[in-house]
Image (cartoon, rainbow, N blue to C red; front, side):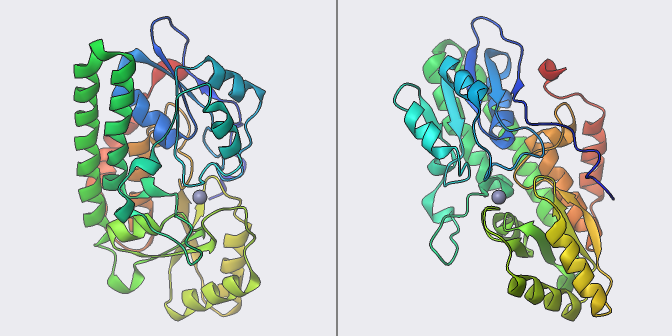
Length: 319
Ligand SMILES: [Zn+2]
């Protein structure tokens, strides 16, 4: 599968139609913007700064982004250094605007750290854990529009239930992969929470951020792992160039083991706007199905869910 050519220009922010009387919200990444739209419904106008295929570790805010933030009522970001190059801007604008870090409100004991004690920022990869941002979103919206409090709570409950259901189906699906094949290798280390939540061993070629280069030693170690364990598939990520994955495939080939690309996963950005994969639920459904099927498991229930949703249109305000 060659996805390189089909990638659209997603560097422009996704802005809903402006309308009076809506809460104007800026969200950095899609995994937050989508849930804000779900909770806020018709009462919010969300500007999502990073669209599909955009890497939040490397993203630098442009002049339009700053203007959107200045025009907004509320700003949501993830935090724990996910938005590496944006943190200074968010901090600076925090004096003038209400800026809320959502990952930073999740339970401390659920956080993973690397050897350097850096918190792993990819918390949305554990769906049940990520539902923890729904209450803080609802709380901030209620502060601004208390008259709609009941609606925000209802929306939050509904999407929370859907996500918990997806989490359970995901766990069941991953557990159908033959035990010795439950190994997930991707471009960068975005899937540690996914691994812990769904029961699969996880390796990234690059570390927690895509800012660091992958070392040759790391590539060699992973080639050894792939050939020793006879791993069938490894995965590219929609927001990270695939050259390191190609190195692994070539390395394994040179040792006489064929490993294929199991598909493209959405790690740090969702899919195209107006598609199911362009929603948080859709991106995670896609990831769970892709990993399960490529590694020899069964994901029928998830596939049915995906088919049902593929016919729907999402957040029509983009169209
Ligand atoms: Zn990442």
